[in-house]
Length: 227
Image (tube, rainbow, N blue to C red; front, side):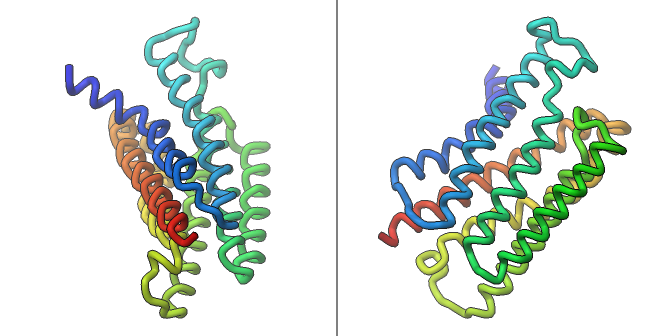
């Protein structure tokens, strides 16, 4: 019984983990330019992930007349949309960090959007999770994370917690994208050939998503102390 409860809690981690940084945001009220894109990402992610998990619950228990292969309760499209939202909002976040990231982030946004327009128009069904979309998003965000980390190292500034609270966001995002890049890249293959394993390995993604939300929460906390 306890195992089932813990399993359910972890299955819904994509939803409740977002309330941690949102709670810090409301209680501590940090105020900085880089807070805005993260705030909108968290709200957008909450709506999308709540829809994803609700549809998953409906399909799991065959509620409201759901049936396999029917697009009405298909949550895959929302994973693709979440991937796009994550790239857009975090690219906006990087733009607020440094003027030198403005051009790079804009190029990445345009390239990602064009890539997905072609992909879903001619090659892939948008109602199926796209390994290419998720892997491209993770890879491009990882590039921005590494470039930003290189900039911080060159600055050689002490006490990153106080001077660069947003560095916590970069750290969490770097971990999330670096590990999930390989998971996303091969996920469609795993679904087709190792379905049970693909379901279990998604726990890794959920664990990393929790860590990402925690890192954003820490960043909000340190930013609020700078007032």
